[in-house]
Length: 265
Image 1 (tube, rainbow, N blue to C red):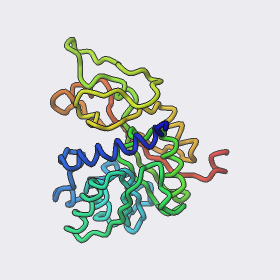
Image 2: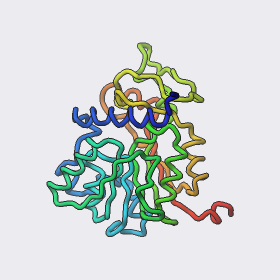
Image 3: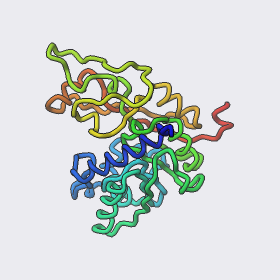
Image 4: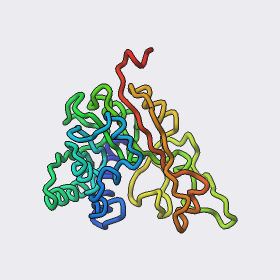
C-alpha cells in the first residue's frame, strides 16, 4: 500500500515533538514567572494583536495554532483572552494542561494537525497566532485555508515562519566564513536531515515553502498582509548568531482576513 506523504509527515512530527517535549528542549519549555509579569508583551512584542484587534485583546477569542508547550496558550489567557490551543503532539499539550492547572487558567486543548481544524467552527476566532511551525506542514496552502475558515472576517492572523533561504542554507558557516546553500529553492518533499542547530529540530520532517507560497498563499486564501518583520538574531552568541548575520532565520507576518469581494476589488 502506498504511504500518504501528508499522514507520514504528521505522524513523524507528532512523535518527534513528543520526544522533544519530554527532553525539555528550549522550544518545549513552559512560560516563566518573568513572562507572566507582562504576558502580552511576552507573546506580542510588536503590539500587533492589540493594534489588529482595535486596541485591546481582553475578551477576544484566540487560536494558538501548533503552539503547545505551556507558553503561548497560558500567556494569552493571562493577557485576558479566551484561548484554544491546537497541537499535533499530546506531550506538548500536556505541558499546557499542567501550566493551566498550576495557574488556574482556562484553556481549551485540541490535538490535531494544523491543516485539519475540523473540530473548530467557522468564523470562531478573532485572532489566530501561530509560532514557527509551518515548516512541518507539507502544504502551507492547506493550513491557510483552515485558518481562513475558523477566523472571522476582519480577524487577524499573526504567523511566524522559517525563511526559505534559511532552510536552504547549511547549519553553520564553513571554515572560510561562507554560508553555503545546500538545498535547491524549488526542492519538493521533505528536506534532507541537517546537523543539529538552532534552526532545525532533530527527528522532524520539514518542508521548504517559497515566498510565493508563504505570502502569495496568504493573499490567495483571502488575507491582506498588514506588516512583516524579520526578528534579528545576529547579536546572539555562537554559531546561530554568526549564521544569522548572513540570513534571517525567521519572518513574522501580520495578516487580516477580508471578504472575497474585498479581495477581488
